[in-house]
Length: 181
Length: 212
Image 1 (cartoon, rainbow over the protein chains, first blue to last red):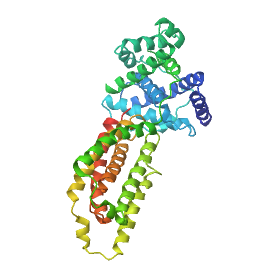
Image 2 (cartoon, one colour):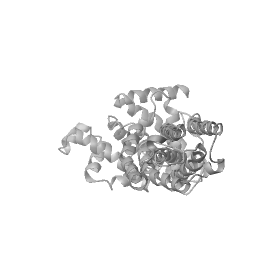
Image 3 (tube, helix red, strand yellow):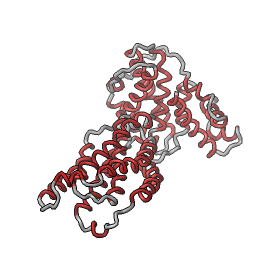
């Protein structure tokens, strides 16, 4: 577990110094851990565990938009788990439950835990449809059509800079809309 | 959207760099400062005998106390804008303004005084102090909370209360130049109540304004 967390810290440092592939790998690596913790939180609150994917996506968006608050000289896992815990409590509260979520819930997750059946996430998708057209088109092109920034710029006759701005604004307003729910 | 798709999208946005919380907080406080200064100029103004007052160490001590409160609270606020942070190891910073006050009270006790202790404590501007400091602090508090939203505080009530102390410290610095009550006993009583009031407002507003 210690090794895994050191690996995350290394990946996040590379990500911040501009390595997009390291960032991608990091997000993929933490997702199963976040999913397992979300399932456990839901179960403990008496909620169906298969609703975990919306919470996972909520956490990932927060990790992305708040990563400037991570101190690169500190280990990454405690920061990640603090964000995740906060988002999980928020999600459970929105579902009308108050539960105590222990930070160990995250740390204890074993990497080899089998993936369980999960209902596909719907909240991000639903909010996506309410975004301004330009942000929605750019997000959809990159997320759903797997287009690169360059291809997306060509497709919509935009500059790459404008695509980047629309992408970031889109992610930020998605998160704001999820929070406002 | 599937989670893998979301991850790919987030990775595509990796190049985006957010400003540090400190610079966003500084900017929003700078934007709100003119509002508080305008209230000060319109309602209070600097006391007329300020040149003489500056030679009184107890007048100067008021600024040391209020600025120490503001600076400690700024440092704690920035620390609390990290999600894994707690007050542990940082709360002692608030002992600096308290220590200055205690030293001031001790110093005053050792000097011959014309007025009895209770008279110095109650002073002549208690009500003005209790209303003016919170009034001038409010614009700064709103600004501080808006700035700290850029961070990721996971203890929003505590972070809000500290933001309240921060804005009360700054507002009290303005107020101190108006008030003719310089006794550390007056400061320890009325400034403290005023700051606690603003901290309470911050603690109530924090959970609403600092969610992320």
